[in-house]
Image (cartoon, rainbow, N blue to C red; front, top):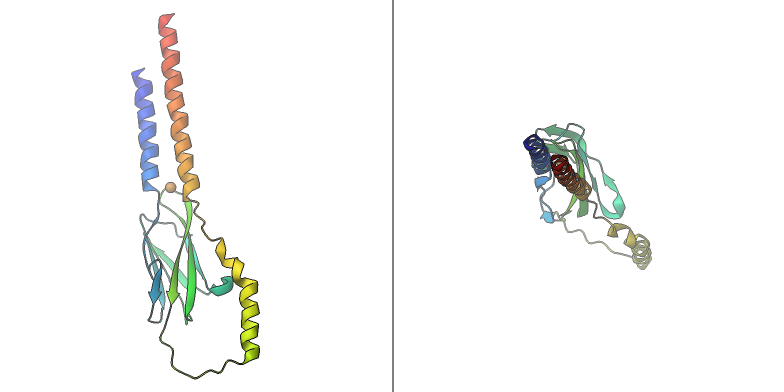
Length: 182
Ligand SMILES: [Cu+2]
């Protein structure tokens, strides 16, 4: 009986420890929901634990157009990548990593680029503004479904494991008691 309790306790501790090591984003530059007013050359993402070399990230601007990211480098818990000539606008950065406990995790953050623009008088013709309007209408709904977080699925996996283990304890105690009575 004591052996079983001991083994189950060890199992719970191991699983609990792994759940604790579950990685997430600690900080970033640019940070989430920030507005950048100087030209960006490097993106830095800092995670809570070391991450695998296969980790990566991508950046998408308006209408989901992807911004090329060069030289993605992972050193321990930090992932960097360089970008070139990002225009003013809003961007979504999606990271895709494998954490220290081997779990693939995805998340995203948003930031805006708002560099000072040199004043050059631009005349918008009526035709151009009409084109813009129809473009806006066509592409508006695309950006709305963007909250992926696979974090939760692996968390519920752990909760499932713990429930299964709890059941194992209850059944073994019940079984052991039954044998003693006979
Ligand atoms: Cu994990």
